[in-house]
Image 1 (cartoon, helix red, strand yellow):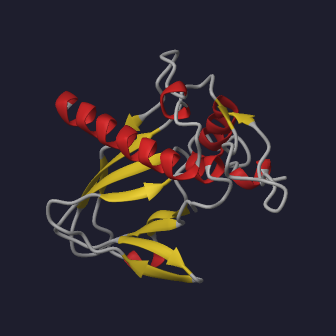
Image 2 (cartoon, helix red, strand yellow):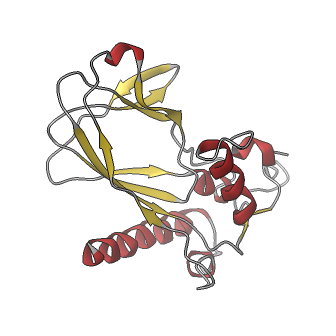
Length: 191
């Protein structure tokens, strides 16, 4: 598992670096947001038990991922991941020996909205249990999230104000898992 996690960390950072390079000359951001003061990236082992009434329940409701990039290893035995496009949810069937890669909310901010964090959900199944293994690349808590230079100008102003990752992560966690109020979204930081 440790080897797998290190491989995902390396892969996700390479993807992040490529995305930054396509947007801005601020290439150093791809390293600076992992300053060693508290890596907040994580891997989650998900188990979705089969559900006798899948039409009445979701495995996971509609959401976008809060971090930078998500790399998901799907269970190849069942299709349950869906992505929202133009008001309709579409199936993302599993493909053997492949990953699903999502842009996260922080990449949407870094790109000043050029890259969109997709809203997706997980359906419940009456037929099978399901496993998934998502890895979430996230910055250090001390990092300030903001649109990168080159993603905005006079004709396309900055769409987000700077904010600390720790503030965003705490608000999302408390609303999502701890049920302590609103599950904040990046719209809170829109200008």
